[in-house]
Image (cartoon, rainbow, N blue to C red; front, side, top):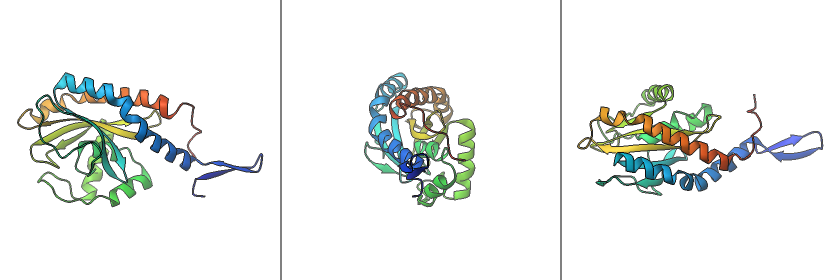
Length: 214
């Protein structure tokens, strides 16, 4: 059953397995995360005057779920509903960093590792090193890795169990801010991501889940 069903010997029946439960939670997250996140995107964009993205993973790639444009909008690749690369975007790396084991390996196999910019990481092992740093620091950066002049700082949206259900990013340009100026806003991004996670979790996980299988 590959985790889809679990046998209950006490009454000789089958019940939903943990894998199916997690798949259901993932589907629910994609339908419920945007409404929960909306006020936090509004607030972060208003505070900073910059573009804010909400994203989730879709088969190892970035799905842009919601977006707030900067006070002075710039043309960006990102659009709501659009699929983008994970290995060279802030939101993508923020989510990849919290995948474990087979999930991470599957996601990495799906990356094209095309060199969009001189700063693009095209070596899977170099990306692994970057993901380890992101996981240790809790924040990801895009330093002109996907689009010229575009920089961003991103944070994962994590459940209390450490499951990544999305990512939030603040995006600017090198004309508007220096990279260190944008990096200084990382605490604001992390705070907003944590607030989204806390509110979303009450919708997605209304009751406690059984413990992880050993």
